[in-house]
Image (cartoon, each protein chain N blue to C red):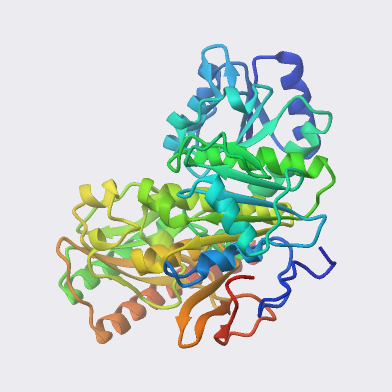
Length: 216
Length: 291
């Protein structure tokens, strides 16, 4: 990480300052999930933690590699709420009992983050794929407390957080409430010529729709 | 006040001393049962071991979430994460810090300070100016009981004006909403996470929820169901600097619409209530100078 923040080479986004969590809102097949994983691909020396709520580790690992997020056991961890402990993937895979176990996700997250810190990794990018699954297993109040706690931890640790949600399947008030815990929001849509993103609430970013390449 | 729960006396003392040295007032307990008597509105954060003689730390956190739900909770333990059954406690959310490392207490202190300052385990979003808002509340809500009569009149007028069941004026402090006046309904103080006003003070203008049961934030809210509230509208009581210290709200037992004119009138009532608070504050200030 440079002094300025987390950088995203190849994407139409300026650096984001440490401690920021963004809500990444985009419908299925819009490229939002791919964008979310691309945002986690940092320079060597940074760590990445991917929380997967509905795809097995093996599949999410393949998705990561597809967008250029390199997996190594030293600096990438997958928190797997689906149950695939024997996954043969080149990242640390940590099991969580399921997507309704928000306490377990939070504790595992803290634990692996701490291990990264001890091994000298100061900058960690965290992605959660996705809040929509958590909302289908838990109520908004519980998911809100979980998100607030996670956002607070990412802030305290100068990390970067990316929380994916599919706005098409939730009430607008649900999405707005969860966005209120985050410092900013990135919307994704399927534009005429392919996927487009728009940043909101992030200082220094253009607020216009811009095309991006979902393969990173 | 912080509460530190650990059956190991030496380890507990070390943790307590570390937190006290940072300026915290700390109560301590060696068991789940002993911890219970400290679980009240004065609790700012809970630090507990997982392994207790009469239960587990997660059981204690569950009780805290029921009584004082906003409290930041920390599991500070040397029980390995693999041995903690979180599945049955999936909805409580807790921060986890292993106790058996050299820097454990320094890390705990950092996290406790951050969580207490930013109140990062609440289940609802906080206004961006929350700290200034709470400071403003201290200044304006000097003797709110004294305003009961004038607020009673305003809420009665509001009920009649909009043709609704009930109206109320409430102040929102760090953890609770307290009502200064209610007409057509009677409210005890409510946990902030259970009130609609908690969300309303985040809005810039009048908040209208035509049907609270259709709103995902309140669909499961038992308090609203018990009070038979289906419609909600409120105007924030806002200081000149923009801090929303409370709300003027109206309720009805059936979903309904609220016209632009209704919104304007509700805003006027909110402004009137805020003026009353301001006058009272200024008068207190003058009296203090006179003395």
